Structure formats: structure tokens, C-alpha cells
Length: 110
Image 1 (cartoon, rainbow, N blue to C red):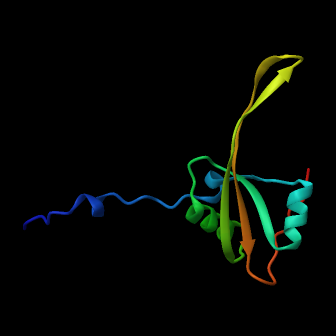
Image 2 (tube, rainbow, N blue to C red):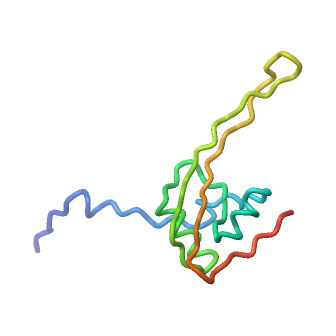
């Protein structure tokens, strides 16, 4: 019995990411509340995720259909104490997700 040679592409298979590894928490602000009226919802996400990962995570966790995903890298900002820089506020990555007509996500602020 001979063994078949398998290319490296076939050997390496990535497991799909689960929602808790992609989504960190929903952003609950005044701007995101206005966007939710237009069927856009905003989430903070993990730094090494892409649009496809976010779409799969939202559809899996909330059981809705995603129409469009937009991703923004929010940079870190300087924190001042008087005239001196006392440190930085860390940056994050956020995703704005548009759902198909007639669907919604229930997000409540803490």
C-alpha cells in the first residue's frame, strides 16, 4: 500500500473562529444608537480579525443575515495631565455591520 503525497495547502486547514474570539463587546454610544435606526450596529472586535470573520461571528451568534461590514482601526490617543503626557489611551478595532431589511439585534447598555 503506497501513501499519497499531499500538498501543503491540503494539510493545513484552519479551524473556523468562534464568536467569542472575534467579537469583544458592542459599542453603545449616541452615534451607534443613531446608526441602529439605519440598521447599522457597531462592535469592538479583535485586532487580527477581518470582514469575513466578523460576518460569520455575527451571523452565528445573533442568527441574522449580514449585508455589509465596515472595519475601522481607532488609533491610540495621548492622555494629558496638565501640560505633561501621562500616558496613552489604547486604540482598538471596531466593525460596523449592516443587516438585511427587517432584521435587528437587541443590544442594551450596561
